[in-house]
Figure 1 (spheres, helix red, strand yellow):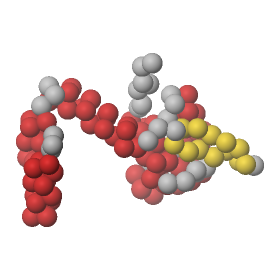
Figure 2 (cartoon, rainbow, N blue to C red):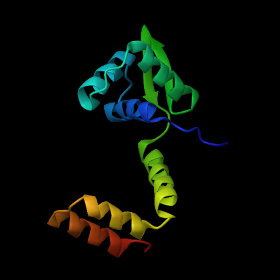
Figure 3 (tube, one colour):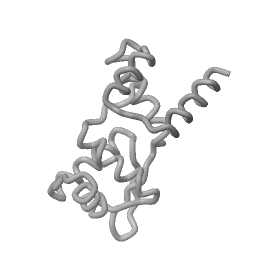
Length: 125
């Protein structure tokens, strides 16, 4: 089964659900979109995002007076697939090219450099 594509707006709404760490309401997602991401969507718009995410298999719902939304797909699994797709598309699958490009715009402190060296040392062992 082909995984459904997720739009940028749906992705931000999904991140709000993942970050909550517990089932959330549409009102919660509306507030998080506004406060954390500066996105002021109407309730019907956010509800449509959430309904689309359910139809695409990203979330599941249950009712307890009102509808609650919770992740159906794991963040770690989604993030890994998302990053791989990006590296494959933009960098022809080259992690080295991706890192080179990333480091042109993102400066690392000494701790991050040390952590990355450790990761690289343990890669593919």
